[in-house]
Image (cartoon, rainbow, N blue to C red; front, side, top):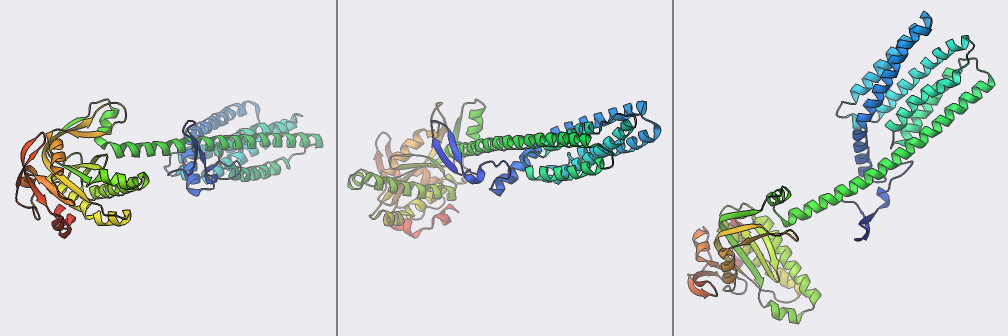
Amino acid sequence: MVLRGQCLGASTGYCAMSSEQQPSVFGHFADRATEARYNLRARTLRRPFVRVYGAIFMIVALAYSIVNPMYLPPQENAQLAILLGFALLTCGTYIAVTFWERYPEIPMIDFIGLLALSLLVGRINVILFDYLDHLNTTLHAVGVINRLIVTAFAALTLAGRPRLFLIWLVFDFLGWLAQIADGQLRMFELAYATLSYFSGTLIMIAINLAVGLTSRSAFQLADSLDAERARNEELVLNMLPTAAVARIRSGQLVADSYADASVIFIDMVGFSNLAKRVSPGHLVELLNTFFNHADACARDLGVEKVKTVGDAYLAIAGGNVPSGNSADAAIAFARAVIAGVAEMGRSAGFDVALRAGIHSGPVVGGVIGATRMAYDYWGDTVNIAARVEGCAAANGIAISESTWLRARDRSGFCAAELITLKGVGEVSVFRCSPLAIADADPLDTAA
């Protein structure tokens, strides 16, 4: 998910979040998708701690089971043994459910499990302190402390869902109220018990809200970092092949050799004169239209974009992107790009002409340097393709003999012409006229 917000400045590296994604203390993220992802991630991360809390509770319950027979008469000990047995069974079941893969999706598991433990602990306290009361030790208020153990458990486990925690507290309070109503408490004992209960409860509410808010803020930060990492990853993969990125990250040198590739150069006819006639903004808009159109054709026809140099677009078939017969793919790509000239001219408001040159042969590809890295191709094949492009007519294609020999569909190309190319020598060049390009279907040629 791409986070919506405004960046306050590249120097700060901070982006302001939209109101829908600001963490709320008493509620949820306004954006439901963000809220769902937050709860799923938070509960997944909290799951190991829930198991630890549960294990601690079971250890304490076992300790009571060992100590009780030493001090309690058989009747009270039997009652407590049953209640502690249910508490251990409930807690053990609760821990086991946390291993279920769907546990993070269902917060009511925590609500029900913790409420059951709270009621059992409350009942245990009533029996225990009723017995102590017979010994003239009025310690009902101390029972609140034992309940706070479970309340603290619930405050942390239900962090991030304050409404659910408040509902849980209502049920816990009703259970506590029903249990102390059975005892013959004097007014001051009731007052102190109530104060102890509500003071502890308020602290637990504050803990629940604080943990929830900090976890939401941490989630928001992590989510922003994940989104930024995804955007950076997309940007890197847009500039470099996936295999090259993997090798760069592992510290390997990226150098490849391709024995049968077809290099395509396409540029605008009369670009220098055009730059003098139109405004810079208009010129950039035209180039952007041209390059975007070429990018779309490259994606559709399995051709790899290498780079743009000024008004020239360099692409290759048979490199990192598999393309079958590289010559046919290159020719189909050139036809498709030139077929969009009319639409580019209508958008620009004046006539636009392109020309393409293709040469096939071995190339070397790789990544050089440590800054502003890009996957590039080198070799005589690239140089000759650039020279052949200059032989094409406006809105036409010129290919070398090696490309013509590799191609299966040679329709529209005239007989070979022997042309002397600067720095190369005499080369047989085959030209395709604009009319032949207009009559051909690039997708049929690629097939």
